[in-house]
Length: 338
Image (tube, rainbow, N blue to C red; front, side, top):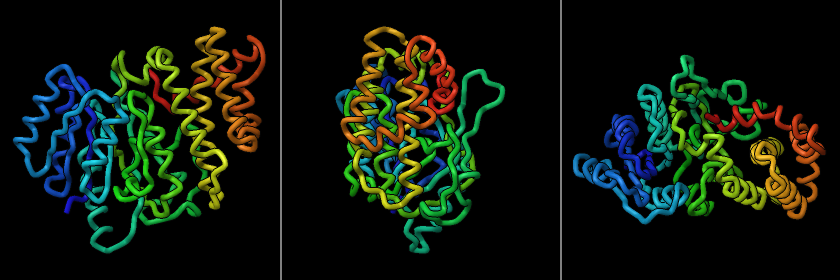
């Protein structure tokens, strides 16, 4: 029985994918690593096949036509046989000590027959050239070292939200909730961590620095200029998240509050990028995005539009847009722009 299935989406990742895979191998026979070669044009396919040949009981190489990060995650989930599922991007890695501690805890929980929907750990912005790495911890928001539910969750600070780097989902939960990420679209990791949340009943948080999130490549998806070039994909993700949350009955107050705040942050990131672009076309897209929310769910629109961030994202005129851009630090903290 495999405890965790790791999906490693790879596109032209030959230069760095080995660092990622080697950080996962210490899990041994308790884990499986699904390397998804997403139509790469470099040596990614060869490296993936070599790893599969060397570790046939642990590593599976899957080759597909290019479908983007989301389609690679979909493929990884389709092939997953482990009880739990985690995505580790090919330019990132896990901290081995934290990883092994978390793996042992998952094995203990499974052996005791306790149900657990989501395991949570810290992640580190492993920024190129930074002397001090920023760590996103959840010790102020979540109980530590015990199984808990949404009613036990405390206040999440801005920039402290659960990104894909922090979570390990129960595989069956992901499959049963029917999550399917859109192809050829960046920033779908927000959908991946967002849509399963109403199905999560039990969580466990370990205050260990599990995920090393590399920041530094100029072509990286969270590079500000790259994000502006892909703004239509960012808007697409934002609208998908609006569609999911609009008019949804979430009886747990804390879950409802958390998901609204998460969407608020995504709207803020999209709005700030469009404001910084500054063209009439970009500003029209911002207005359209907020109108889309209003058309989908007027009550949710009112809550977010007249909240702290929504009101500042929609100030009129050039002076108002300058104030809005002052909120850029929120987007930086959330996305880890480089």
